[in-house]
Length: 421
Image (cartoon, rainbow, N blue to C red):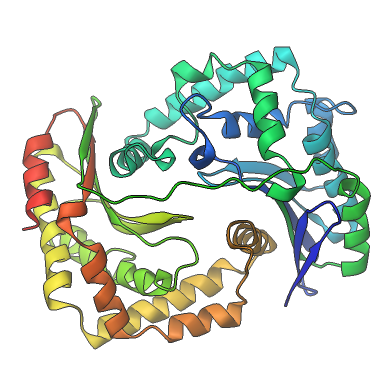
């Protein structure tokens, strides 16, 4: 059972007590990410994530690391398109040390000028590493093709040319706007003593009175698709196709997940069986949904030999067409639902995954479904729900494409995808 609380300064809290665990995962979430940045700010959310580990008024970066290591805990953070999360995982007896450390990083970070400039080089290397991975690059390029001028098109890491120009004052201004008590959620899961934990949270965050507003995101407008190509001297050719998806919290999320499992979400899916198992044309081929506050994207990816690209993409679009025109059988539908339930339950068997799930839901929707409610929502999905969604989503005229490889196949690929087979 989840418990919801709110401090007088606006900070929302969600807790899940799991008494048979000996650990606690504790997360601090902000609605700050590339989807809320403009072109001149792109990458600042991620840059801030790095900088808050670089020292506070009381601790150096080394002392931050030593504090968490001295209690055998884990300390980390991640930035996504719509949120940033700082978290620790510790033994239940050390939870106050973990919270003290996280609060110090968030409330007392010094943003040292020398560390600020040094960290630019670290993030530039992260960007270079990302761009050296064609599979990562093609997914990022797909967002750019699909979302166009919408902020969701921008990369989470930012762009190298813009990153080196940022000043400390620009970062501090961004921090002041987004790191506020009204734009923040605390989530914790594990062996929690509720009353004691609330006292600790109040002790370290209760006097922080930096109020603010919750940032809004412009609505996604789906229009005619586009195609983007990036040249890389590599052996494989990487292709990804995007169709319109479903926003966070929408009732169609579960029918979409069932559809995904049928088409490309696992080893028994149509795409995996047809392209890898039957034809041996690709090592990696799969589909996946991405859901955001104002819309979503349903994507299909494949990596193959350049001379097999057209054949693979024709097979992908044939399977899309078959699913749209002829649907699926009862066995596929039932298997996809059971797969979905099993994957969900297995994904919740750690304090970290539960802290993530409830924190993200509370931050983005201010609503958290229990495990029983989610299983019930999956059980309620009917074949007609999935068939209706297929007709709405798998529309070639709305598809966008991203390609990464040594040869520009834009025209040939676009004729295959836009034609819809």
